[in-house]
Image (cartoon, rainbow, N blue to C red):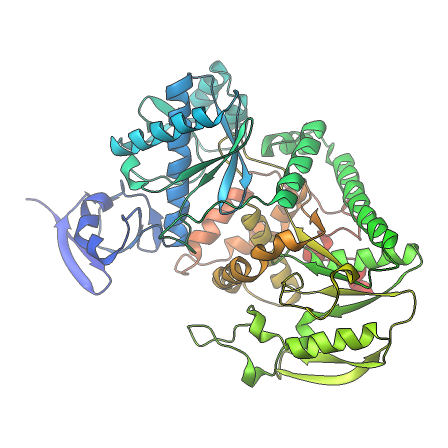
Amino acid sequence: MIEKIEITVGKSKIKVTKGTTLEELAPNYQENFKYRIILGKVNGQLRELSYHIIDNAEVEFFDLTSSQGNRIYINGLVFILIYAIKSLYGKKADVSIEHSLDKGLYCETNFKLTPSRLKEIFNKMKETIELNLPIKKELVDRLETIDYYNEIGDFEKSKVLRYNTNTYVTLYRLGNLYDYFYSQMPTESSMIEKFELTYVEDNGFVLRFPTIYSPDKITPYVHHPHMFDVFNECREWAKIMKITTSNDLNELVSKYRVGDLIKIDETLQSNRLLGVAEKINDKKKKVKMVLIAGPSSSGKTTTSKKLCMYLESFGLHPKVLSMDDFFVERENTPKDKDGKYDYECLEAVDLKLFDKTIANLLDGKETKIPTYDFILGTKSFVNTLKMEDKDILVIEGIHALDKKVLTNIPKDKKFKIYISPLTELNIDTHNRISTTDCRLLRRIVRDARTRGRSVEDSIKTWPSVRKGEELYIFPCQDEADVTINTALIYELGVLRTYVEPLLYDVPIDSPVYEEAKRLLKFIRLFLPIPSDAVPQDSILREFIGGSYFYNK
């Protein structure tokens, strides 16, 4: 007798044969999605579509418009890219997935790349997609896999698996190509429909795809020279230090040599900021304000306070203002589509008051400065400020670089700084480290320590924070005079000691359990690093505690 199980999808219930895969079940619900179903969730746990359902279950499906589905879409696209390159130019031809760049991924080949070759790669990828090749998941012995990668000369992959304690590991196969990815995959190449390749330089190009913010089309590529140059500079430094992957960092940790790296990295960070202070000092006759912006958990507070310290060393007297104190009254705060107050949008700021206040200060007038009460949602005007000859304003805020801000102030009076933690590390050539994940881990640790906020709350609110960044922060990054990377090459090892127990506390029935599990899997790629050697003026202290600047 064929055994039946009951599957619940939304409000519908159906009986299916025990062992039915999500892929077999998905066509029944495809009409509810604009794009191909690419991933499923069974009883709250994310599963690839090859998953066999063996018990009564609640099932949810995702396409590329969800963060989970979009991540799978990108993983599949990267695998198809690698497959196309090796199919065209041989097994030794390879591509390194470096970092994010303008809604895409910047990649570099280990062979001479030309626009015509990039077109060949594009066509091969399209052909692979049209052939609808299966992407198979295979469980293999970890030690045998390490031997395999050593034999073919892919030592980065074998090193990654050294720090994996499981008996078996998952490999994915596309055609005759096997590869290791630490994240999930689509089951067929045809699930990847849209993508573009944009030539950048000799060996570099950008792989672009639909995002959850723009699922219907791939927006035209915009080159961000500041960001690109900073990434290149940091990557070259990482090569000099011979620390380009998580494996390299882990080896230093295992040999008790990470203390020296912390000192070197922190010195480099301080020198970068000191260099910015020197530039501002060189323009002190004209520049009267420094504007600092960046996405969440970039270290804006530490950066601004440390910058003020350096400016003081040049004889300048910085006066710090926060744009958060210029929020409109709560009853005038815009709301998002869910009816919640939207503090991310520019309309949440009283721009008329802000512009007038800054103009008065620059005119040398004694001016009342607002202080915003986030509990009451109102401003009070208790403090006053007056600018003297050597005073300079340092203004921090997510909208500080927006063209609509301070339009009444001449451009040459402003010095704009954009900051973001842009990690130099990758896991290996095919598995990159997301700067967004690094920021989220920072935020989880800080929120738990300073605001008593649970990991669940931090993860739940993260999509809203990210949406605000996409709308209001990232589009303004090219307005900056200087871009500063606030990532520390060693920080993920330190963050592990703080964030790992927090992530374990997320219950299995939580709606964010799968995201917590994904972050746990990621952070466990790094050996833990004690925080003892992290200096008090480090940006990392803003998140883990013990900051010199927060004791002031």
